[in-house]
Length: 180
Image 1 (cartoon, rainbow, N blue to C red):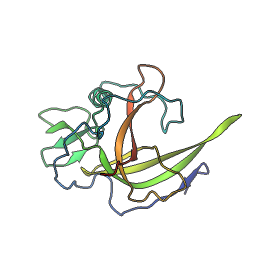
Image 2: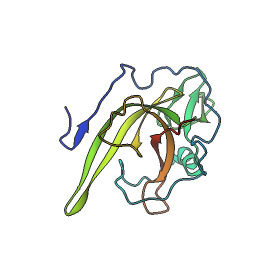
Image 3: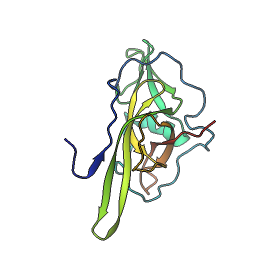
Image 4: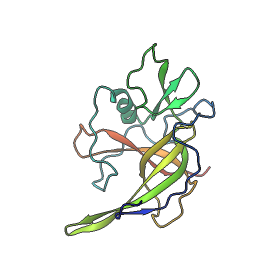
C-alpha cells in the first residue's frame, strides 16, 4: 500500500536485495566519474533522510564518502555487501572494504512530496539502485524529472553533505550517468 505523500513508480525486477553479485571486481576509480573528491556542500534542499552523524560502526564508510569513495564490504565468497551487513571488519568475518565503481541502474523509485506551512512544494525522488557490483542501495536520486519513467536508468554516485553542520556526513546520492 502506498503512502499518501508518495507517487509510487515501482518497476520491480524480481531480484531480491543481497542476491549474489556477478563476481566482477569493481571498476577502478573513486566511485564518482571525473568529479573532484569530497562531498558537495549542503544546498538546503529536501533530503531523503535528515542530517547524518557517524558512529563507530559507520566511521570507515563515512571516511570514504568524505573522500568521494563509495565503500562496500567484500567477502571471501566474492560477494559485495552493503556496509551495514556486518559492522566490524576482521579476519573472523572475512570481510574487507573495497571501493565500488559507484555506478548502477534504478530498480524502483518514488516521488516524495514535501513543503507546506507556507513553504514552496518540493518533490524529492528516492529510489533503489542496483549497483554494478550487485547490492541494492536506497538513495536520493538527483538531476531527474520526477514525472519521467526512470526504469533501468543508468546512474552514478555523487556525494552531498547531509546537513549544514560540519559534523553532518556526506551521503551518497545518484544522478544520471554521463554518456560516453
